[in-house]
Image (cartoon, rainbow, N blue to C red; front, side, top):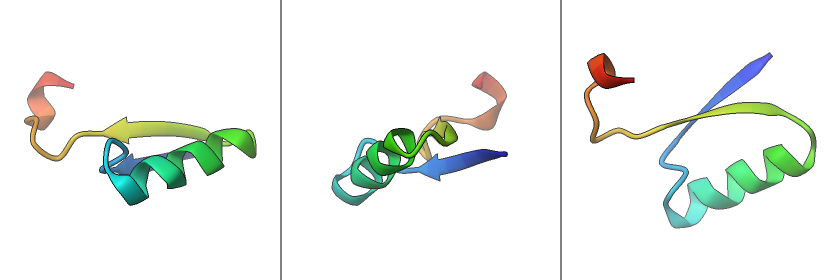
Length: 39
């Protein structure tokens, strides 16, 4: 299962992303300021 993390560059989101990675989760980091067309 892939987990999408919004705001992973921020204070809370980065901690959530780090925790998920430590637990072995597959994550995808999304930036909310970038249009989805460029992903």
